[in-house]
Amino acid sequence: MLVLLAQLHCAIELVPATEPSARALAPVPAAEQSAAGTEHVFDYVDALSGERLSPGDVGALVPIAYGPSGALATRVREDDEAGAPIRRFIALPPDGEYTVRVDGLGSRRYFGCEARLPAAGDGPRRVRITLLPRARDVSLTAEIERGDARRELTPMGLREVELRPDARSERELEVVRGTCSGERPPRGSHWCVLSLAAEPGAVGLTARAPAFGLASMSVAMTDPARSVAVSARYPGHLLGAFSLRLGAAIGLLHGDGPGATVAVDVPTRSEATGGTCPAGDTCLRGLVHLGATYGSYRRDTELVGPTTQVTPDGETSATYGLLEAGAGVTVAPGGTGDRLRLTGILAGVLAARTEERRANNALLSEGSSRLGLVGDVLASVRFAGPWTVFAGLRALWLPSVGARGRQFSYLGAAPVSAETASLVQLGLLIGLGVDP
Image 1 (cartoon, one colour):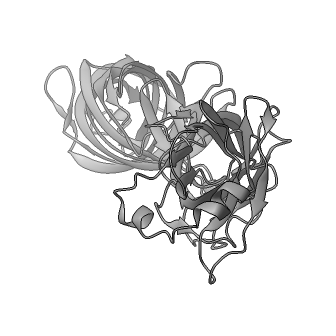
Image 2 (cartoon, helix red, strand yellow):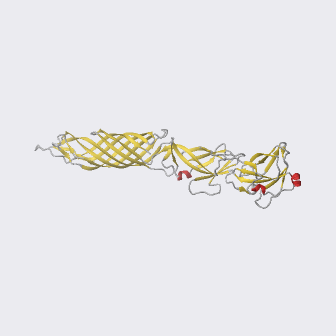
Image 3 (tube, rainbow, N blue to C red):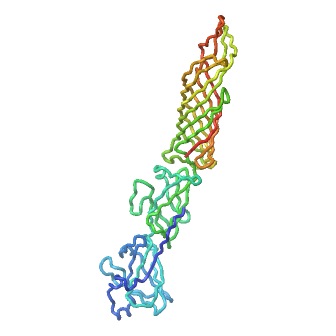
């Protein structure tokens, strides 16, 4: 990410004589002016805060003057009271321009600056030097992105992200955790970036996040803000806070027409990465499952007896409603662009079924409630934003779902058998989902 806003530049300029600060200069006798040169009074100003700097702030920044033929003769005059501007007598060329340069290589606080000034004019001269600070407070965030969707790393994960100079800037850049004033805020990721380059410009940074790798960014030292916000972005999986599915349940074994199903799955979240994972890794998360299904079944009944004989005795059918609660896992395979999800679920169910009747409408079993198990294996594919399409297989087991059938009797009547039968139903699940 490149942080470049309105750019600041250092400046060296003559203060107009109309300004109060220039008019307040004490005059220097003409004889002294001609012997020593033209007096220059240098005011140093911080370019970001606009505050005037004291001589102690800029002790390593020595102004040097150059004319067409080289360095100009300079004589130092003692400063006035503490906090007064720094003064120099400079022998100016008779006409044309001369260059004033402040070399910043000896300062860890400010970059240097250079400008050309007109030689013509009376002294003393007040020269305002606007300097760019070398240090910037950098506020770092880390975002996991998938296309246009982004999610910030958790505060715990952000604490593990390290900021350092990149390869091209490591010899002229210092990066220290905390603000440039020495504070270490309890929240967020704050760093002090200090450029030791000869000139202000863009400096390269690298943010290293465990598991996600490296992200490059740069900060312009000519940015007008003392505190700069940057964001490291990493490609990754974005797991939704929940997954909502609505679809059809079609029985393949012991089915009796289509049904409907609705489910909500809530995946677990990592304390370090939240609901995200690196894009190249296969992400495995547990989930909590809640659901409801309306469906129907058809099963075979038997005529039991006499003795140990068992004879097929037709079919019976019923409809049922399921309330499901369970757990499972969801898998986001690496290298799929975060479009594919594989999910496995095992849930306990409370099944409420209607009456079972035989082909001649004779009652076989009264309506009842049963406990059972259901297992789903699903594949979901994201096709637009949070929208997904899913398909999978379901296995439903209901023990003691109803009577096994009829019991043979030599008296002619065949009462309902006391034995019960279980139901194993296999089905297909298809439908649409939302994974925000």
